[in-house]
Image (cartoon, rainbow, N blue to C red; front, top):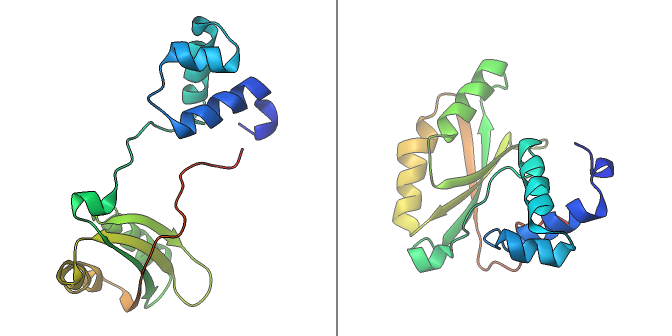
Length: 155
């Protein structure tokens, strides 16, 4: 569904839910100017159309012992369809990889990896990442400080 097919009430619902997915339907309805039943139906339609993919709880990584945020560039030996698919399947198995992007430029993939310490990162690289068939080079950058982080899309 394109943004053009979302009316102002839909967009307002999405803005509010991005900030607080646990908001009650009654409060959400009041905030968007609807009664609860039509508001709930709109939310259900947004979910059915895939605009709302899922609702999650965001955790504070350092509070749960995951204070190391690493950006990893991975270059493959060759970029065949089979090699790319094999790499992507394997990366999906690793819970410490929060994000993975197929890139243009020097590296084939950019990963965002969260771990608790340097030893964990070393094990991840040596025992997992470099053992994926076709991986030619791994380059890492360690985040010193998170300046901005949001999951809120600019609607």
